Amino acid sequence: MFHKILSMTKNILIGMKTVGYHFFRKPLTECFPEQKPNLPHRFRGRLALRKDENNKITCIGCKTCMGVCPAGAIDIETERDENNKNIIKKFNVNMGKCILCGNCEYFCPQKAIVLTKEIDIAACDKEELEFNINKLLLSQKESSKTLKRKYNV
Ligand code: SF4
Ligand code: SF4
Image (tube, rainbow, N blue to C red; front, top):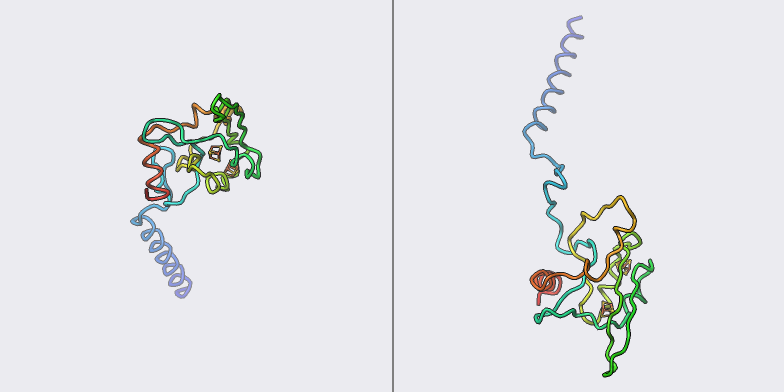
């Protein structure tokens, strides 16, 4: 009987020690989305298009990104102007299809398409995951910040 009481007390004390340890410890979880997670430097979030220092889109409409996308998530339509330059008529990314592999960013000759650190893009409607050029374009300030973060230039 005495041994039983001793063993029970010991187990209770061990349990209380574990509870006490976790009670005063910094939580491992984060209250997302109120609290934004501190994402690693090379995190791959939703796609965006960069502008240059003159506030112009850096994309030249070469469609390389569309060709290397394994998910068929990019849809670009272009036309030629009188100087034989591409005019982008349509630039859509379906974030519902995108697997965030980073191929488009890696192969883009202009560093125009970039994976941002934005993760909060969940939607109830599939159409909300279709990002057109207006939704994809970053501001000039965000563009240069992203370029610095990604390529240190
Ligand atoms: S984002 Fe880059 S790879 Fe894609 S069309 Fe524009 S310049 Fe070409
Ligand atoms: S990150 Fe990968 S899957 Fe997503 S659009 Fe770019 S190439 Fe396609």
